[in-house]
Image (tube, rainbow, N blue to C red; front, side, top):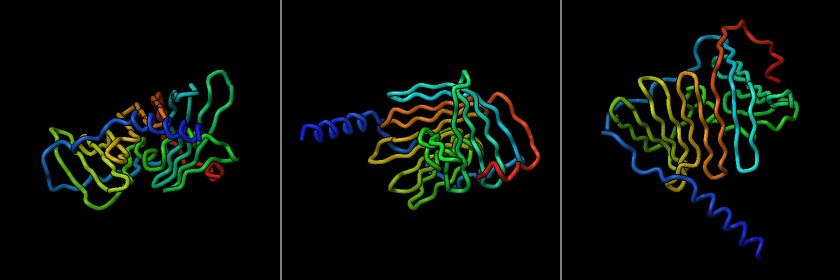
Length: 206
């Protein structure tokens, strides 16, 4: 019984760490969400990354190989040559090659697509509001998704459950930050180099 009560208390504390979503800001407008496909052909992005949670902190370099319309491979290397991990995102499937467990440190599929500027959420009761030069869109009911666009560029995506923000991605041209509030996970990426590549070898998707 004591262990059960401790678990309940821990979950309550974690849930309390999630900020309240509040009302969707802006004035109602009749617009659709901008299209956000992967563009630019095959690309390779080199980035610096940092990860923190309640128990772990790590830093390193990474590579994202992007193949439109729906495929991405992410490789993470720890500073000091201490190992790393990888994940393959194809459409709505996220997996790790060769049994690697790196995906557990990453955002869920919809949020991971958002780190690349791609919006892949949909639902009923969609609200669209204009807040200055920011277009804000809310869709779904369990969970609720909120996206913000500057022009046609996705800048924020949030997953909201029970009126509280559980996950958030914030992005710009070269930086991305991800937060999972209830588990206190943080992942930050800063792109340092960009390359246009020929089509990738099919082996990287296995």
